[in-house]
Image 1 (cartoon, each protein chain N blue to C red):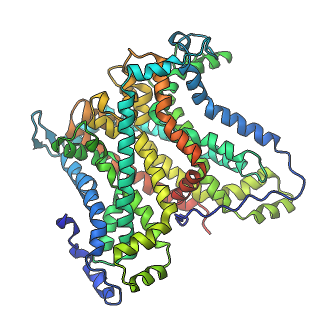
Image 2 (image 1 turned 135 degrees about the vertical axis):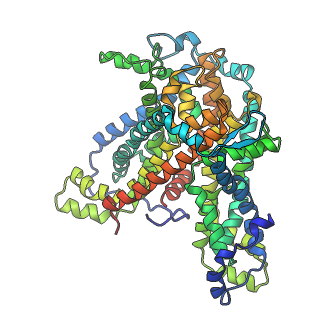
Image 3 (image 1 turned 90 degrees about the horizontal axis):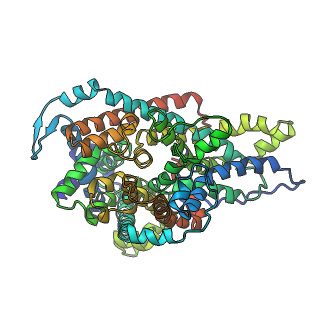
Length: 289
Length: 313
């Protein structure tokens, strides 16, 4: 196991060979065949979402729709509770990501930089969650949400996901890597521990916080099992669960389902393309534990 | 909260010895950890205990539970569903594990010095990992469709008569595994890319001077030095494989729409089915405990095996 470095080191610029450029044609050939395979489902999804239902179901595949059916995208909003589901997805994702950042940085800081009785025991208990598959706590979580009368509500959807053992681990590692001088200086100046945390230490782990934000956004947006369990009405569902239930609904045409799923996944795809470098560095480092 | 945050007795001896020399933080640390530890205790730690207890009970129709000892486990182990679901989970896990060797090849090609467009390739390979599984499942269902799916159409060119992927037992789990494989490659490429950056370039330069071919360099430098990342990715793939649910649910649909699902269930799907469809929560808890043991075993086995082939310096 290599060290987990949470501050993504600026990757050195790949050095270009000084000598004559090698012939990379075959490498491009292999990589682009691979890329075509990887991209094919997305391309197919775009094409089919712009076709008619008959074209999608024709036995000889139509590569290109005879007439581009932009109307399918309008139908998504007419036939499906897409906007409600989108709102739910956005709200629960934003709150869970902010909650995880708040709780995990606070706890991670205390676990990394403070001394208190029983610290290792409490930390061990929190981190033990990382080893436990989610089904093991899912039923009781459901019972809690049910007993609180929160089934089908946004609060019920987002509540357990406010707390993350992985995030705590990530933040603790980030704080551990910081030098202690700054902290000591601030303390001598009379700052209380919260002020030290807020003004001095937190700004220093920004890269790690963005890693946490990215991983928890992805997880929250795409998660299926929990929303499927705590919501029954499709108006209350986030997009992931809402789409999954569409498969079992034969009244909705293929192109509309495809258009809806494309719209549902687009936000994370766009977010990723915009923040590419951050995401790649972040996932690479979070993966290197 | 107070019960959670009061210092546990067990840890006292070790800390009291060191305490004197260290800075005292008083109540502050507890304020910092209280929200997280409280939430984790209520929503994660205590539920684990509860699930263990639930697995020994039967849930009444009108609420309340009765202690039934190991009955749930007995039924579970006598019923073929568990073994079938473990088998399906293993098929899925083995097929998706192929993402690692594929990613090793892709990542090392991407690492070619002076390769143009490497960043673009990386994004393209990575998009399936970011995409919402339920959303991509929709288009895969259409690609796999037995009547009008493009996959069978293309297979037809080679004279292969493709099955009804979604509704044929056996084929369905393979179809789901292919989607899983497709979605995992990008993540592995990224992690391996980070691993490759840590290989000192002079190793390749030295090999070059010794006249080693690129293939030889790949075999003798790249692969051995990537083994820590490869080991990590295999463990992650296996753990995720055991957790497979989303794709199965989204590609195949529910049991009442597609009976093949009964033959294609993963362990987690079996858990979902028992816990929330047929409402046998005690049974679902027993399944969850079995998953816990299986994941723990798989992890231990992997760590053991890892010692044999992972290159550590």
